[in-house]
Image (cartoon, rainbow, N blue to C red; front, side):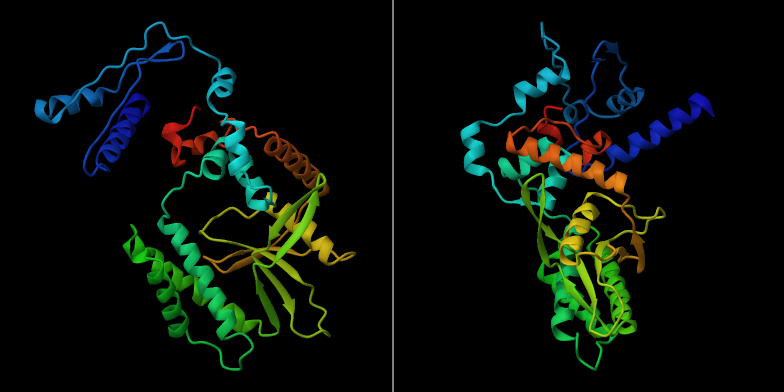
Length: 331
């Protein structure tokens, strides 16, 4: 209880942190954060005491007479690439993922799309790509045929794409491949139970927001194969992960809504979320109030992109340490 619980938690966190290192371990601390003085962790003393001097390198960085700037000033100084550089690098075509990336953090967007800094593909990205390729192959090879693929056939197909992408060499590669097999088996069963439904993967649409044309790619469009069917056409967003909370309408659903109204005027918008890890498919509703809010946010993002403003202002600051550009970001 109390301080003992805090110390125990810090000890566990410290141990896990230092044992992740493979070749080198770099630890840093600050004596002051803003105007507040801080004491370094006691576990640093224990670590230093337990290491021979030849394995330990201690550096002390003093910044004398440094002017402490407010966050806004620091951002203005360091976060804006040159105008000529932007003109050469910027793409004029607007896509949904462009707006989403800018809203997540304008600075992260600039690192990726203006500076062209890339990050290596991790296991999850390869898992997603292998799943999409398997679905495309499944649609081309099996949809419309009387004989449906077996579980073994579709899992072999997934493994082929997974190995083609080099997924087996990534950390936890075997676990990702096993889950990929679970995902495609759930999809196979879904296709068998809904034989009268045609799936179109990632069709593209163009919608207009604030006078700007934006490219929208829908994960999946489901439509009845028979013209006599009363089943409505569905726009489906696919997700992964075993989550407890129910999916809610996000910016992507806002663009799906605009595209649906454009393609099916006068009809009720049919949006669904398909969790491909669990097989759960649920309808998504977008209220008029939330739609208005999304419109305003998109309008502001478009203005920021047009003016080439890329401040380090993450929408969710607690995710900053997971950003591949964390150590070079002025924030």
